[in-house]
Image 1 (cartoon, each protein chain N blue to C red):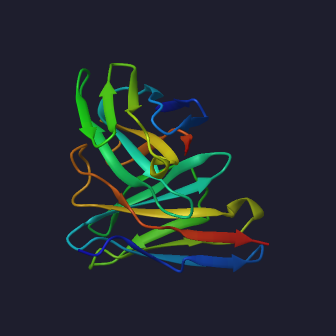
Image 2 (image 1 turned 90 degrees about the vertical axis):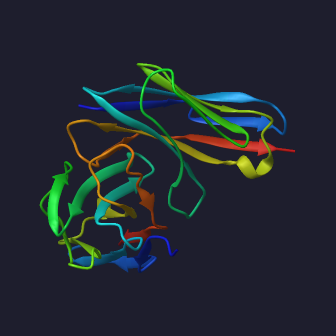
Length: 115
Length: 111
């Protein structure tokens, strides 16, 4: 069974640009969560989508947005990039979300560098 | 607000030298506590979930335990391949799937 797939693996952008990252969850998984990982802050929750609806949102500015498609694939978008947005962006999928017995499985991440 | 604190930040062990990693947490209601392993350049890999105080789970050289305020990851007779960053996360009963992570313990096991 294929794992969580994130594309692209690496991205280099300049300040002010926007970027879209993609996540394909494990087959059958309907919940997709996004996290930002930086050396200083560790892993921080961005948002979660379930059945195409955003169900939970972390404390990030509105420049960070996402969506989920009917096939459960998800994208996140960051507009007006800032230097501080440089990070590893991780996607995690789970079967239905909302329960501790529902384990989140992570992809390898997209490494975003903002110059 | 949920909080997770892991200690130590870094740990260096010789092969065969057992030790424990600590994860202290504060949540309004614990739905579950999770342990993940992360290798450089990779995403976190799931290890264990613990749901209630007193629960224990084992996998090869790893054993996770849970109390009402903290969790321990015991590593028995570690090998160099156990070198990684170990992450602890909690899930609150009020926040659906959201995981709140600690900053991790970087473990290095040498020959």
